[in-house]
Every structure is written in C-alpha cells, then in structure tokens.
Length: 464
Image 1: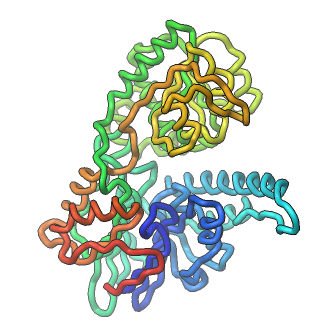
Image 2 (image 1 turned 90 degrees about the vertical axis):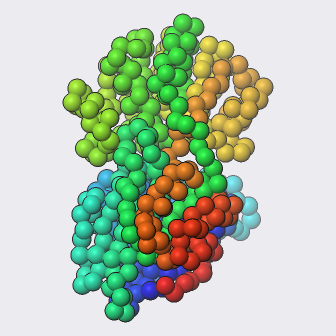
Image 3 (image 1 turned 30 degrees about the horizontal axis):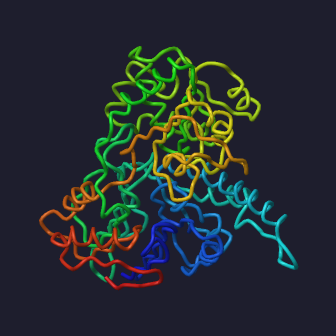
C-alpha cells in the first residue's frame, strides 16, 4: 500500500490523501486550500492525484477545507463514487453551492479592479459543476460495514466534529495481507452539546490522524446556558440588542439549542430571537431532518419537544428587507448572524447599526483570527472599520471560550490510545495541523506507536 499526501500535510487546509493498493486507487477528502489568494489558487487548480484514474473518494465531512474542491476534481475528469454519510451529503451540497456563489461574487469584484491586460478572474467552479458532482454521492450509514469490492470493506463511525462527520475504517486485502487503515478526518470533543462523542474504535495498522490542536488543552466547556441567560437579562434591563456573530455550520445550531432549553425552562424574558443567515437557515433544516443522530441529552429533550431548533419567539430571517427591519425595531432582541469572524455576511450590517450603542452586547463565541473585525472587537479598539467607515466601539463586548468543535490534546490522547489498544499502531501519519501542533501530538502518542509517528509534507509518499 502506498499513501501520498497532497493536502493538509504540514498545514491545516486542503485535506487530500491518495491511497493506492494493488487493485485500488482512492482519495481521502478533496478540500480547498485556504490562505494567501494566489498561492491557494495555484494549489486548488492542481490535481496531482490523476483524477481520471481514481476509483472513489471518501469524504470525512462537509467543511470546505475537506470537501471544497470536489467540483474542481470532477471538472478535472473524476467520475467515480463519493462515499460519505447521508447528513454529510446534504450539508456538502449546501456548502459547495455557497462556495460557488462566493467565488462568483469575488470574481466579479476582482475583475472590476484589474488593470492593464490582466485576464478576467474566473471562479474555480460554478453551481452547475456542484450539481454534477453531488450526483456522485453514495451514502453510508454510521457503523454499517459495506463491502465495496472483494477484500475491500469500509465502515464509518461518528467523529463528533460536525453533523455527519465520520471516522472511516478500511479493511483491505493487499498483496495477500489484510490491512486496517483508519482516517480520522477531524475529531470532535467529548461532552459537547448536540453531537455524540467521537466513537472509540480499537485496532489499527495504519492511521492517518488529525493534529489540529495537538499542542493545546481547551478550557473546560463553559456553562453556556448560564452566560446566555445572564447576558440576555442584562440587555433586557438596558433595552439593548444582543448580537452573536456565529459560524453558519455548527455554532449557530448550538446557540439555538441552548436558547431553546432556556425558553423551555422559562428562564428568559420575552424577547425575539432572529437567526439572520440564509446559509445557517438551510443548514439548520438539515439538522432538523437528522435529529436522530444527536446525542442522548438532545434525545431526552426531543421527548418533550419535536424540534430542537424552533421555539416561541424565534424567527429565521431570509430576505435582506427582513434583515433591515430588525435594525429598525425598538427594544431588546437576540440577533444570531454570520459570519463568525464578522468579516462578511449580514452581521456586519447589524454591527454598523449598533456598535456605537453602549446598551448593545456583542457576544463572541468563536476563535477570531488576527486582523479580522471580530478580533478588533475582542481587543477593544476605540474605533472599528465596517464598510469602509470608522465607528466608535461603545458596545459591550463579551466572550465565551471553550466551544471549539475540534478535539484538543487530551481528547486526542484518549481516542488514539483507545485505537491502539494493546497492539499499538504500526504506521502513524499526522496531518491537518501546523508543524508545532503535529510535533507535540507525535511526542504525546509515541508510546502507543510501534514506529515513530510521521509528519508528512505535501507530495510525500510512503509504502506501508
């Protein structure tokens, strides 16, 4: 068996790993590279895995750095099946269509600002390409082993990262030997709301494992309900708005779930809640269709409430006119809007209307990258720029840490040790992490590996 790492190797984005046996060639994930525009564009245009010769692609989950270049590889000639869970298939279609829309908008903007004889900017793919590639999806339910060919079995297990995310185990006969290959995709955390913990597999010969937070311990998951309750009560007493910038996939649904619990226990004042993100609204409908996949706490709540994402007073906003009306309304309201780092989306409009009001509470619930508007809010800049205009920051900015959907070093250590069991892991490859994170994880799990873990770089191949 030969494994070649074409993405998320020595870095985080662009997940793409090629596995070749004596009878099969398949790809694990096909994600977008993200970062510096020109460099990422070049990587996203190249497919070194010979797309026309691939038998299949196995998709771990629907984040863009894992699924975002599926339309591109289809354009490059791939025509095989794409295996994933049913929820991932639905979420991926929504995310890819949104990616195509953003690329079209970016191309129009950049084309207006080019100089000289530079050719027009073109999207890497369009919506038609997305519709073609999603027809290649073939779904696999959790914990059901599928024999895809003689001596080639695959099973997907809960990864606990986002809805539909999967750890994939392959049992492959290669050159007269049965080899057990496990690909983690992105592992989630234990004891987080909505999703099951990562499923504890045991037994593995070859591991391709993520290392995103291999050098970090997350703070304990906060009592989010307590913080939400206090913040909303404070805003209600002052007559201000609560603005929550939130990622459309995962974080928005977490917040709505917590608010639903508070409403059911009659712990909140009577204030409207607006979810103002068309993308989040479409994704929440997928969560509604797959409520049976949610964890035991959610299942207990479902016995009293048949929809965890609807409650009296919540409104899912669709049109721009509806969004504008929120800002004209008097009194307290909770506004959950994308994007999570305040760099795009409708949240910027709400901030522009309310960031200079000391009654407003801006609640930051996710990581804010350097130089983003969200980071400047957290750092307490006196003025913040929104739509090329400087606004005084008078709103109260509060932050809740500890809601990351990625496993930290303690979660990874628990999961990898369980996977190794008493036999250990023969070959370990750590991907999807910055170098310092991967090195830290390698040192932590070295004792459970029969050979030192390898941190592959892009383009490197290994025989196992």
